[in-house]
Length: 170
Image (tube, rainbow, N blue to C red; front, side, top):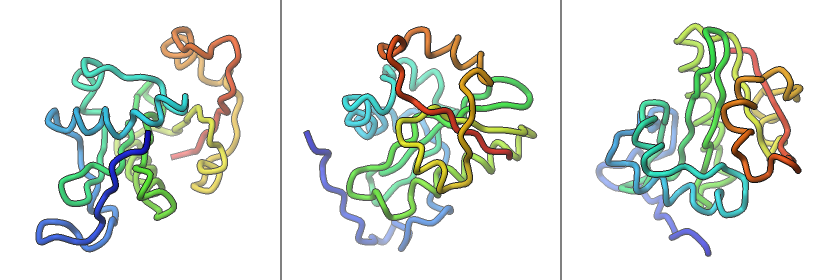
């Protein structure tokens, strides 16, 4: 099932381009659109499923990018310690992929991590090439035991994980 097409033409209330200024913190009213944006990636196994309850509970971790009234990109920063956080739930609407929007979201999350005084961010991904292009390097999953304990233990792919760990200094 393909996501609804997004009109990227500027409107009077829309920035003329999807620049970092278009990134904002998510609010509770964004939850239905976040669920819809992430649904194709959950279906393909590229993202872990998140319930409405989980999104509401962790909404402060999320950044979103809008085009008009539609949320076309998102990502979250999950803090594990005073030094380490995970970039998670990175999703870009199908119509906006290849436009640099994913990089914008990643850089905004890295800037947030830096502002918090973190030293390193990581991700577990089935799309490592993207992360390598935005300054990450491959890492060993064993470096992130809190992630493994928190999420991997309940992942449906636990026994046959095909995700690659990537990390970047902040």
